[in-house]
Image (cartoon, rainbow, N blue to C red):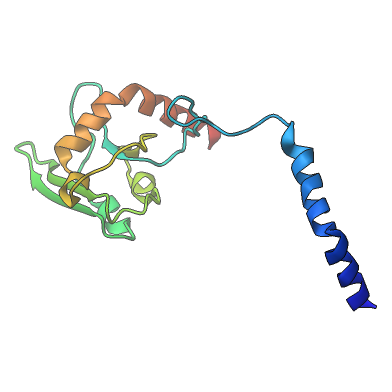
Length: 162
């Protein structure tokens, strides 16, 4: 009996008819495709893109060289070297994130006690060589200064959700 049903389905192309019904049903619906460079989809304030280091409003670096982000990074993408300041506090002399290793998990951001390292909404970056994707302290601070308004707003929204 099953062989007869299969033969009839193949003879009258019933699967093709079912497929065309599905296609016809969605043919005139509103399209949801985004034309990427011209249109952008909305992003969550918790989006995890390229990293940045923030500063306090007085211009001082937030990073206190506690090295928690380096310790918690599962990909070992963060390298920190610290030194003591004349006033006895610590500061970073070298802060690097290798984006070729980074898995953008957000653990560095979660572990930072002073909200120094953050992940921005920037996802459009590339490099022609491996060294282009090595984020140094200077690059991270520049990204933080450029995006500070957005970062502060995202942090405020994040606190509202917690």
